[in-house]
Structures are given as structure tokens and as C-alpha cells.
Length: 431
Ligand SMILES: NC(=O)c1ccc[n+]([C@@H]2O[C@H](COP(=O)([O-])OP(=O)(O)OC[C@H]3O[C@@H](n4cnc5c(N)ncnc54)[C@H](O)[C@@H]3O)[C@@H](O)[C@H]2O)c1
Image (cartoon, rainbow, N blue to C red; front, side):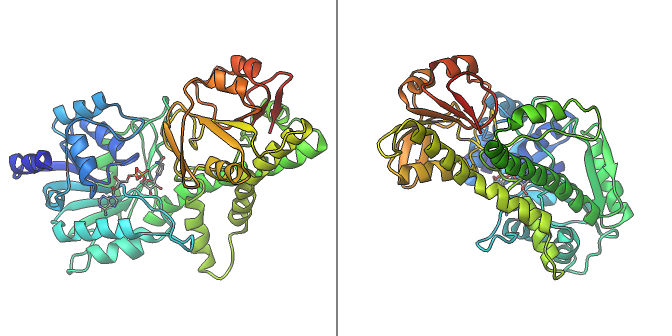
């Protein structure tokens, strides 16, 4: 806490180009890229431990190393829990979480909190951009009224825009700099101001006619993935029953040079985007009095996948006259996505809980997750997965982290249920 307090005192009078609100998977890489291009940037976050850690050069997201954060700090970046920092910036970008509430509807409390903080420090000419994924209308109907409350008017006293966050954690090819940035403002001046800001550190800015179009473009992208993943998940279930190798089918269809994009089945959808964002859209559509059937269907199908994987585990063991109870089962890879340490909303948790509930002698390995909370108990990642796979009656391959030696795995395992379609061999069964 002292660390940020000191920064606060040192820089109290300096202007900043940008304050990023919410220093997580989205906000930190954004701040990093802006700093690399020479902008003066600070971060505001409610999490005091995270703030202190960042100022001491310790990263909290996969895409940035400690060295990256130290480099940012050396270039003048600082994080703070003191909201008055917002008042020192020409632009403020909101990158706070947008989860679901208990009724699976949008939980905008972090966006509201961040907007209220901005309203307390908003100054003339300041640009505010919302990046958090949300339903169309949030910027206009939720954020704008709070900022205009004291008689200020957008386009005259300040600028307001939406620009969807499109980061793909763990993707070495595409990051903040080279993913085109869509921006849509409440008015032309706001679109211009936001385009100017991003144009300083992002290669390509795509202007759209308004905030709603910008909000919806992100939801179209995620819904498109969501629906297509559900499509292949549903196909995986009946292809198995029909005796068709769907992985081979996708490989074949993928050779068509146009009109087809390959999606692959898996143990369910996870993370902070695919299982959550389309709910924001279906919530909004439902308010019109009718459902968004594609999204709801996709949700239903993908939500079935963890139990389907458990069924396949049971069948696999059954063939060998093994009960689940007391049998050693090894889960490989528990994160929702390959090569990152993020297990938010991972469907693997449901699989693990079911197997534990059935009395399985459950083990897991993940190079990124040392300890795993499952149904009230804490499991620890086994040290040597190749050894463990030779001892388990069944290895369930759930996430294809690059660290896994697939040939060796297929050879060492007693039996594998490969939910990623990556292995072959006499003891390998594909999802
Ligand atoms: N992670 C991704 O891959 C990804 C990709 C695309 C879009 N998004 C979207 O981006 C948004 C942010 O996601 P994230 O993954 O970066 O979240 P995160 O949980 O990694 O980080 C969010 C940060 O915001 C802070 N915060 C919460 N409320 C705050 C407030 N009122 N004021 C200041 N700070 C506050 C939290 O302490 C946390 O540090 C979400 O809308 C998400 O859907 C995420």
C-alpha cells in the first residue's frame, strides 16, 4: 500500500494520457501496449494486493511476465487504489469484469462502480471508453446517464465510446497491437476521440456508427463461436453412436478453401467469454418478449458436455469390467484453455466433482494449476504425468497444453479418453 501511496504523492500533479480501470487479463496488456508506444499510463483497481504486487513488478496474468510488468513500471506506469488518479487523465478505459448474477443475467456492478468513480472525477474534454463485454445499450443507457448526471453533456463536455475488448490470452500471434480495434462513440466527436486514442498504440482502428454496433459486434463474434462449438459438440455425441470419427470429418471439411471454418468438440465451454457473454445478448433479446433461440440451444448443448464426458468414462471402464468407485482416474489439463493458468468456468470442474462423488480415486495433472479445489477437497497436481498415466486405469485428456508429450502419453497410458482429438493408438478412444 505504501508503494502506491508514494507514487500518488510523487506524480500528483502530472497529467496522464490514460488511466486503465481494472488491471486484469484485459486491462494490463492494454496498459502495456500504450506504455510501449510512449503514453503516460496509470492503472486503477480496487484490489489492493494486486495493485501493490504490480508496483513491485509482479504480474497476475499469463500474457505478461514479471519482467514485462517491471518494464512497465520502469517506463512510468503505476497502479493505484486511489480513484482521484482518474481526474489526471485525458482518457479513461474501463476493463472491469462483467459476470453473470445469480439468475444468470448481467451483473454490471463493476461497470457501475467504475462509472461512478469516473463521474466523481470527470473533467472537461475527457474521453471515457468502456471495453468490458456487455449487452447493446449499456454505454448509452447505463454509463452515459451517470456521467451526464451533473449537467454535463456528451460531445460537448466529455466524450464517451465503446470499444470491445478482443484479447485472446495465450495467443502468441495476436495481441493488443495487431488485433483491429472496433470503436463506436455516442456521437461523432466521441468516435473520433476514441479512434485517436487507440490509433496511438493499435495498428488498425475500425470505426462503427455507434456504441450499440460496437457492443453487438463483440457479441456476434462470441455467439458465432458459441453456436459453432455447440454444433460440433452435438455432432460428437451422435457421431460416436453412429460409429463416425468426427475429428476425421472436420479435418476433411477443413480442406474446403472457402465457406467453412473448423471448430472442434470438447468437454464443454469455459472461461470468461463463451459461456457468459451470449447470456448478455439473450437477456437483452428476451426483454423484447422473445427468446434468442440459437444461443439458448447452444448453451443447453454445451452444458451437457461435462456429463457426457462422465458417461463416456463410465462406459470405457465398464468395457473393462471396472467400477468408477475405487478406480484410479487421471485428468490431464484442467484449465478452460490451452497454455494458460486460467480455470475460470472450466467445465472440467463438473467432471471432477461427478467422478469424486461416484467414489473415483481421482488424480489430476496440469502444468499451470498446482492445487485444485473439487467438491470441498483440495487435489494437488501429480508430479510426473507420464508415470501417473501408466498407473491410472483411465487417463482423460481434457486440455492439450503444449507441455504434453502426446506420443509418449498414448504409449504409456493404460487407456485414454482423448477429449481433444489429438492422440492415436490402440488404447486411445476419441471423444
Ligand atoms: N479475459 C479474457 O480473455 C477476455 C476477453 C475478451 C473480453 N473480456 C471481457 O473483458 C472484461 C474484463 O475481463 P478480465 O478478464 O480482464 O477480468 P479480470 O477479472 O482479469 O480483471 C478485472 C479487474 O477489475 C478489477 N475491478 C473490479 N471492479 C472494479 C471497480 N469497480 N473499479 C476498479 N477495478 C475493478 C478487479 O479487481 C480485477 O483486477 C470482461 O467484461 C470480460 O468479459 C475478457
